[in-house]
Length: 327
Image 1 (cartoon, one colour):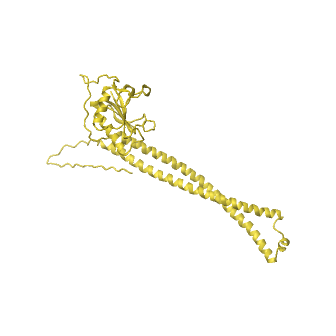
Image 2: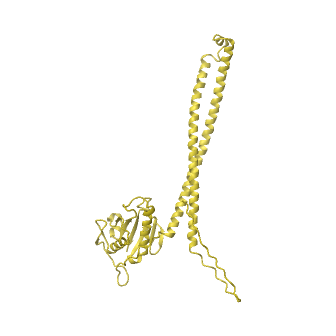
Image 3: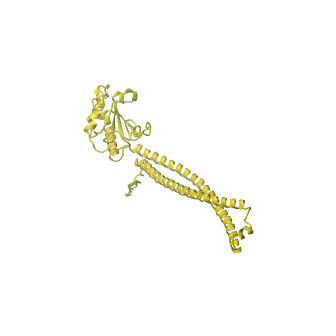
């Protein structure tokens, strides 16, 4: 479904008093201009993708119809070839066109003339029909080759437009990041007197696995659940997996109620958006190091940006769960 964005522009007019007013400085660039431009690029990319998709479908349909015609033509050629071969065999075994004596022996002179005419007609008509079908077969084969090239080009155009659409969508997502509802503020985790985060080990029993997590990760998890984010979660993983999970400083929180499934859509996608946004909004209170969600990566220094660590799977691309790590 195409998305249409609308902008509201306000034009201010200045009035002149009896004295000249100072010349106004150029207005600062609207920070929304870039995002609108990106959204327009996405809309154009989607429209071009839809056109390419339809052109590919049309080419494939024409190719299928042409293949059916070629099959029918080949069957007809086979049948006529057999008929002409039979006629040629008759000519060969009778020493050419049957003699007048042989034909007269079978009936009256009128019948003989009819017989000769029939033999001549069968030969000429079958040969003509066969040649027409051979020509038709050659024409269809040429059309098939041309259409195969058309389908090949249509596929390339489709893939190119699909990639452009996906790239534009990722750029829009990277600019905006997920937005969440109002789920309240988290209670701050304990800090050192100087405001720094105390060093913590993996010493608290992980309520989601048989492993352990840090006290700060446990606090963040409890705060998220208190805010209503209570779907399936898995925190600790063995050291073989690397990253923050073996240190007890990370949790994966499923977007679907039943656990880590396919790509989150609909209400599950909204749940993930809200959860990721909630961690970002409360990052300073909870000591959030970074968040990964739906092919996007957030950290306090850079904000939202594209996530390049995915592998094309829902879990690898983090399109079925929100990953949160704390300091």
